[in-house]
Image 1 (cartoon, rainbow, N blue to C red):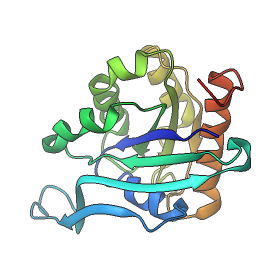
Image 2: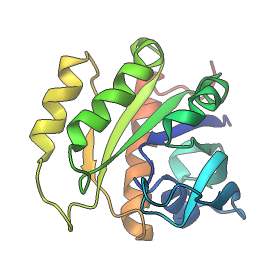
Image 3: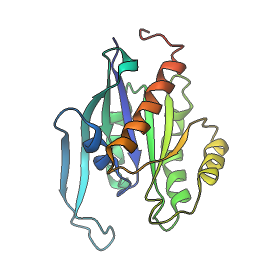
Length: 186
Protein backbone atom coordinates (compact mmCIF):
# COMPACT_ATOMS: atom_id res chain seq x y z
CA UNK A 1 0.00 0.00 0.00
CA UNK A 2 1.42 3.35 -1.06
CA UNK A 3 0.06 6.87 -0.89
CA UNK A 4 0.77 9.35 -3.66
CA UNK A 5 1.10 13.09 -3.21
CA UNK A 6 -0.67 14.84 -6.09
CA UNK A 7 -0.32 18.55 -6.81
CA UNK A 8 -3.32 20.22 -8.48
CA UNK A 9 -2.38 23.47 -10.22
CA UNK A 10 -3.97 25.97 -12.57
CA UNK A 11 -5.15 29.54 -12.77
CA UNK A 12 -7.63 31.05 -10.33
CA UNK A 13 -11.09 29.82 -11.18
CA UNK A 14 -9.89 26.65 -12.94
CA UNK A 15 -11.70 24.40 -10.49
CA UNK A 16 -8.93 23.16 -8.21
CA UNK A 17 -10.86 23.67 -4.96
CA UNK A 18 -14.06 22.43 -6.55
CA UNK A 19 -12.50 19.26 -7.97
CA UNK A 20 -10.83 18.37 -4.67
CA UNK A 21 -14.05 19.07 -2.75
CA UNK A 22 -16.05 17.00 -5.23
CA UNK A 23 -13.90 13.85 -4.91
CA UNK A 24 -12.38 13.97 -1.42
CA UNK A 25 -13.39 11.22 0.98
CA UNK A 26 -12.49 13.41 3.95
CA UNK A 27 -13.54 16.91 4.88
CA UNK A 28 -11.40 19.17 2.72
CA UNK A 29 -8.90 21.41 4.43
CA UNK A 30 -8.78 24.72 2.62
CA UNK A 31 -7.44 28.20 3.04
CA UNK A 32 -10.05 30.06 1.05
CA UNK A 33 -10.62 33.71 1.93
CA UNK A 34 -12.84 36.43 0.52
CA UNK A 35 -11.32 37.95 -2.60
CA UNK A 36 -10.24 41.55 -2.00
CA UNK A 37 -9.29 42.02 -5.67
CA UNK A 38 -12.71 41.42 -7.21
CA UNK A 39 -12.20 43.92 -10.05
CA UNK A 40 -9.23 41.92 -11.40
CA UNK A 41 -10.55 38.47 -10.52
CA UNK A 42 -14.31 37.96 -10.73
CA UNK A 43 -14.47 35.35 -8.00
CA UNK A 44 -15.85 35.58 -4.46
CA UNK A 45 -13.37 33.26 -2.71
CA UNK A 46 -9.69 32.55 -3.46
CA UNK A 47 -7.23 30.00 -2.12
CA UNK A 48 -4.25 31.61 -0.41
CA UNK A 49 -2.43 28.53 0.90
CA UNK A 50 -3.73 25.16 -0.16
CA UNK A 51 -6.63 22.77 -0.43
CA UNK A 52 -6.17 19.23 0.86
CA UNK A 53 -8.27 16.13 0.29
CA UNK A 54 -7.85 12.38 -0.08
CA UNK A 55 -9.31 9.73 -2.36
CA UNK A 56 -8.75 5.98 -2.73
CA UNK A 57 -9.25 3.72 -5.74
CA UNK A 58 -9.24 -0.11 -5.78
CA UNK A 59 -6.29 -0.09 -8.20
CA UNK A 60 -4.21 1.58 -5.49
CA UNK A 61 -4.74 -1.45 -3.22
CA UNK A 62 -5.56 0.64 -0.16
CA UNK A 63 -3.23 3.48 -1.04
CA UNK A 64 -4.50 7.03 -1.35
CA UNK A 65 -4.13 9.99 -3.59
CA UNK A 66 -3.32 12.87 -1.27
CA UNK A 67 -4.53 15.91 -3.18
CA UNK A 68 -2.87 19.28 -2.66
CA UNK A 69 -4.51 22.18 -4.48
CA UNK A 70 -2.19 25.14 -5.03
CA UNK A 71 -3.38 28.75 -5.07
CA UNK A 72 -3.79 29.99 -8.62
CA UNK A 73 -2.69 33.59 -8.32
CA UNK A 74 0.90 34.44 -9.19
CA UNK A 75 1.30 36.42 -5.95
CA UNK A 76 1.07 33.11 -4.06
CA UNK A 77 3.66 31.36 -6.23
CA UNK A 78 5.99 31.00 -3.24
CA UNK A 79 3.55 28.35 -1.95
CA UNK A 80 3.85 26.31 -5.18
CA UNK A 81 7.40 25.15 -4.59
CA UNK A 82 6.68 24.13 -1.01
CA UNK A 83 3.66 22.11 -2.11
CA UNK A 84 5.62 20.57 -5.01
CA UNK A 85 8.12 18.87 -2.72
CA UNK A 86 7.75 15.10 -2.89
CA UNK A 87 4.92 14.94 -5.42
CA UNK A 88 4.38 11.81 -7.48
CA UNK A 89 1.92 13.43 -9.87
CA UNK A 90 0.63 16.74 -11.13
CA UNK A 91 -2.84 17.59 -12.36
CA UNK A 92 -2.89 20.75 -14.46
CA UNK A 93 -6.32 22.32 -14.79
CA UNK A 94 -6.91 24.64 -17.75
CA UNK A 95 -9.89 27.01 -17.70
CA UNK A 96 -11.22 27.08 -21.26
CA UNK A 97 -13.37 30.15 -20.48
CA UNK A 98 -10.36 32.42 -19.96
CA UNK A 99 -9.49 35.03 -22.57
CA UNK A 100 -6.36 33.09 -23.60
CA UNK A 101 -6.41 29.67 -21.90
CA UNK A 102 -3.38 28.36 -23.80
CA UNK A 103 -1.26 31.31 -22.62
CA UNK A 104 -2.46 30.71 -19.05
CA UNK A 105 -1.47 27.05 -19.28
CA UNK A 106 1.86 27.99 -20.84
CA UNK A 107 2.56 30.17 -17.81
CA UNK A 108 2.10 27.18 -15.45
CA UNK A 109 4.13 24.93 -17.73
CA UNK A 110 6.98 27.43 -17.51
CA UNK A 111 6.67 27.81 -13.73
CA UNK A 112 6.69 24.04 -13.20
CA UNK A 113 9.08 23.20 -16.06
CA UNK A 114 11.73 21.63 -13.82
CA UNK A 115 9.19 19.56 -11.86
CA UNK A 116 7.40 18.44 -15.03
CA UNK A 117 10.66 17.33 -16.62
CA UNK A 118 11.52 14.99 -13.76
CA UNK A 119 11.00 11.47 -15.09
CA UNK A 120 9.14 10.13 -12.07
CA UNK A 121 6.35 12.70 -12.23
CA UNK A 122 3.03 11.60 -13.66
CA UNK A 123 1.12 14.43 -15.34
CA UNK A 124 -2.49 14.85 -16.47
CA UNK A 125 -4.20 17.88 -18.02
CA UNK A 126 -7.86 18.48 -17.29
CA UNK A 127 -9.72 21.05 -19.37
CA UNK A 128 -12.61 22.71 -17.52
CA UNK A 129 -15.48 24.95 -18.63
CA UNK A 130 -15.67 23.60 -22.18
CA UNK A 131 -19.45 24.00 -21.80
CA UNK A 132 -18.86 27.76 -21.59
CA UNK A 133 -16.18 27.88 -24.29
CA UNK A 134 -15.48 24.85 -26.52
CA UNK A 135 -12.35 26.44 -28.07
CA UNK A 136 -9.46 25.70 -27.88
CA UNK A 137 -9.89 21.96 -28.29
CA UNK A 138 -7.97 19.04 -26.82
CA UNK A 139 -5.59 18.95 -29.80
CA UNK A 140 -4.44 22.53 -29.18
CA UNK A 141 -3.66 21.65 -25.57
CA UNK A 142 -1.89 18.44 -26.57
CA UNK A 143 0.26 20.40 -29.02
CA UNK A 144 1.22 22.88 -26.29
CA UNK A 145 2.16 20.07 -23.90
CA UNK A 146 4.27 18.43 -26.61
CA UNK A 147 6.04 21.73 -27.25
CA UNK A 148 7.09 21.65 -23.59
CA UNK A 149 8.12 18.00 -23.80
CA UNK A 150 5.27 16.89 -21.54
CA UNK A 151 3.62 13.59 -22.36
CA UNK A 152 0.27 13.60 -20.56
CA UNK A 153 -3.31 12.50 -21.07
CA UNK A 154 -5.65 15.41 -21.85
CA UNK A 155 -9.25 15.05 -20.72
CA UNK A 156 -12.28 17.29 -20.49
CA UNK A 157 -13.57 17.48 -16.93
CA UNK A 158 -16.42 19.14 -15.07
CA UNK A 159 -14.98 19.90 -11.62
CA UNK A 160 -18.52 20.01 -10.17
CA UNK A 161 -19.48 16.49 -11.27
CA UNK A 162 -18.33 13.54 -9.16
CA UNK A 163 -18.12 11.03 -12.05
CA UNK A 164 -16.13 13.46 -14.18
CA UNK A 165 -13.61 14.22 -11.41
CA UNK A 166 -13.49 10.53 -10.50
CA UNK A 167 -12.57 9.68 -14.10
CA UNK A 168 -9.82 12.31 -14.06
CA UNK A 169 -8.21 11.01 -10.87
CA UNK A 170 -8.74 7.38 -11.84
CA UNK A 171 -6.91 8.10 -15.11
CA UNK A 172 -4.11 9.69 -13.10
CA UNK A 173 -4.00 6.66 -10.75
CA UNK A 174 -3.71 4.25 -13.65
CA UNK A 175 -0.94 6.39 -15.14
CA UNK A 176 0.87 6.47 -11.77
CA UNK A 177 0.83 2.68 -11.62
CA UNK A 178 2.02 2.42 -15.23
CA UNK A 179 4.78 5.00 -14.67
CA UNK A 180 5.91 3.09 -11.60
CA UNK A 181 5.96 -0.18 -13.66
CA UNK A 182 2.92 -1.50 -11.85
CA UNK A 183 4.76 -1.75 -8.54
CA UNK A 184 3.21 -0.14 -5.50
CA UNK A 185 6.50 0.14 -3.58
CA UNK A 186 9.53 2.16 -4.56
